[in-house]
Length: 80
View (tube, one colour):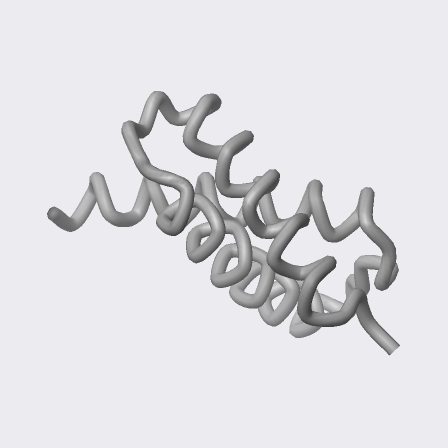
């Protein structure tokens, strides 16, 4: 079923904020939400290719979102 729209925004915002704190990125609220949501989508896709699936609940998606957002920040820094 998934988290739903509001829960995805909340989890995405938290995940993006955690990633920006870990990576020392100076991002705003909307960038944190976008990073968290896109990071979760990207890392979930990569993990599914490896046969690993995160549960559709808050904590696993928060972890995957923060890790994915951190990877996006690192990739941006690498190529920018």
